Image 1 (tube, helix red, strand yellow):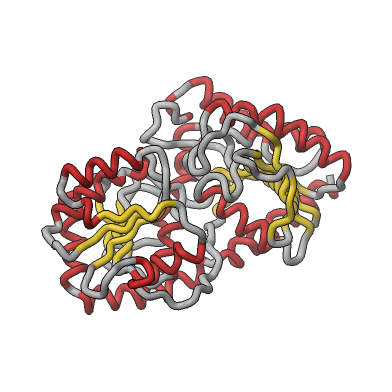
Image 2 (cartoon, one colour; image 1 turned 90 degrees about the vertical axis):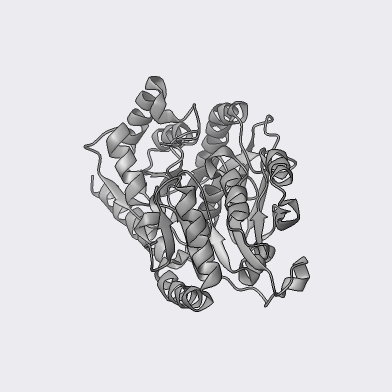
Length: 386
């Protein structure tokens, strides 16, 4: 097959949605021709080949941060992405288009599918449908809901990565839509062994680690409070990621008197991210919602127990008392108590770690790619018959 992916964000820009698209594209590129149409910014080249994937970037001009998008850059991607995509379709014979995120990428993918008369698979990731931390979340606004409903109905096939995401499609947009569930996956970690001393930590410290953009939806201010409330001076919080809330979080850690135990590691490469996970003890997340939650898979693959909330796609594969603790949303007192238990009972924590290494085997990218591959092939055959 010759596959065209459309995604406004693609590494190094953006977060989990772009990362999974890259993993999926690279896995499929081992046996198909794969092109990704995405946005350009921050000095990135207009075109490159990355791990066998041709990446074409349409200029958007207004992007100012690697980790977080802004509305002007998203709006600019609509005309620029469509123009770049039409040039690609004129020069290449694609078999299928797979668009990731109904907004802002959905209109681009839909326009290109019509232009090239190609089958269109639309993958929704969660935050593009529902983000309770944002006033501009599409589910809150009639115009955006109407626009999304139309884009969902126009697609030849819809994919959601979790039951939660599919429920949001049906609850806020159209209960009659047929949405395939294809769980996401991560690349099997292959990193060299790390030592705590490599990152300035000692063996007598208990490392709680989290990964994510420092934005409101991640609610990392809660993690800093949880750290203080554990009443464990040996407990440290390792934050991997960057974003607009970093200064406020640093100020909070100073005000709570835990600045020496909160470590902002910034945006790391994959090697350092997995090395930091490898030397940590517990993965913690107070994210208010995740469409799926790739970071939880990365934690499981690193042999970490996971403590998080019960709201989002992670509930498809995380189980309270089995993979760690799944806590009612924003019950910070219980969240803190669960962290204390795992810190104190190292034997129980180790059993959970061993179990997570077993459970994550079914959630690597090759399984996700095979399901997408079959969906693409079925859709192409269906169109050929018609």
